[in-house]
Every structure is written in structure tokens, then in C-alpha cells.
Image (cartoon, rainbow, N blue to C red; front, side, top):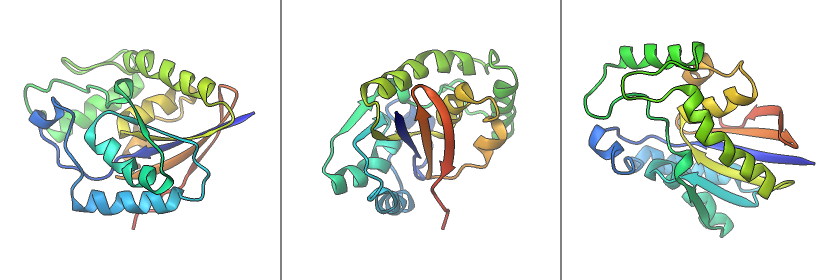
Length: 193
């Protein structure tokens, strides 16, 4: 029996360390506009259930879809973005990219006060398996984040790593087909404007 997960990476939202400590930023105007496009794109996919990271930007990206389909959004704290490094000080973009790349080369590597890819998989994959079991044969839209989305994909297929993550957009949509608990196909549905 096939089950489908639609990973919906969140739209554009401003980033700040302070906001990240308290549920993250809300979508900006472009992010809100793109969230409406996400809803239109997924409207006829036959989505049965909508789940999301509890962070604002992920939830707000699937909110227009939930409204359109008249479905509740089920929030999971376990689907929040991976803590890549400390939230106590700014890290340069270059340092961040090097750290993320290294974390896919060595899944036990992490930046100071961050989390390894393996640690993130340890808390995120049980939720994915629970969703695949609880909603077997259904279509699940999942509001998510770029790094954790890639880490989850990496668990099922190690070809998904840093280069894949770099090639994603905000927002983005990937349709994952599972046969039982095995990932059998991935299709990108989003086309950046």
C-alpha cells in the first residue's frame, strides 16, 4: 500500500536569533503570497491530513492549504528545524555552510551547541514512521524546514545531502512515495516563479 508525504518547505521569513528561540519568525509578504500558491498547487492532490513543525514559518506555509481543504493542522515539536549551532551568537554564512556540509559528510559532526544529523534523525524519524503507520495509504502534507527535510530524506536515501539542500527553495514541495516504510520515489512539485 502506498502512502504519500508531501514535504512543504516553508516560505521566506526573516531570521533572527531572538525569534528562533521563541518559535521562529512569521512569513514575510512574499512568503504569504507563496503559501497561497502552495495551497493552489496541492488543492487537487487529495491531501487527507496536514501536519507541521510547530515553528510559525512552517505552520503559516501550510495554513492556506488547511483553510482551503477545511482541515486542522496537527503540530509536532519533533519536526522543528535542527539546531545547527548556537543561538547565542551569530555565525557567518560561510561557517554555517561549512558546518552543514560537514554534517552530511559525517553524520556525527555538529557545530558548537548544535545537533548532529544522526541526533536529528533519532528524534525526527520516529515521528515520520508514526505518520506512515497511522495514516497508511493516505496523503499527508507536512510543513517543514530545509535542513530537517534533507536529514529525513537522507535517512531513507543517503544521496540526499548538502547539494540537495543547497538546491532547494523557499518554499519548496517534494512528493515522497512510500511502499510500507520504504521510500520508493521522490518528485519535486514546486517550480520557483
